Length: 137
Image: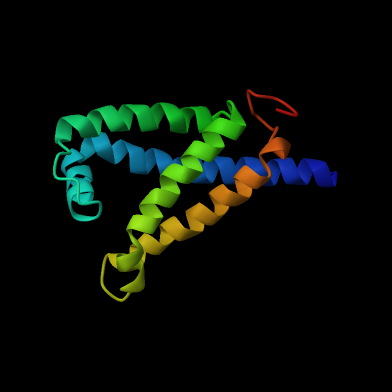
């Protein structure tokens, strides 16, 4: 197996595993919309967010994550997914610092995911395996 093929397989694994993480995260907007309202009110200080808005945001995020999973428009989708996730990680810094309190320790999984998303964005032009955008885009 060539080094290029190994790299493409590795990037595909990163895309699918981080995509799976994001699918679960996005699906909660439909299964537990009150959680999103709670996060926006308590972490971001946005009292105007409603459960109805959770469905709209979930739909938009779901489409973005789907585009990410299939490797569509990689520069845009990988960048937006990384920025979207980074926003959540930055907002959760107080919880990350207070990692000895449950469930704050679980929030550290988001940091590893962010690292993988940044790496995937940097290497996006090499992520060609099962990518609808193909090579050199």
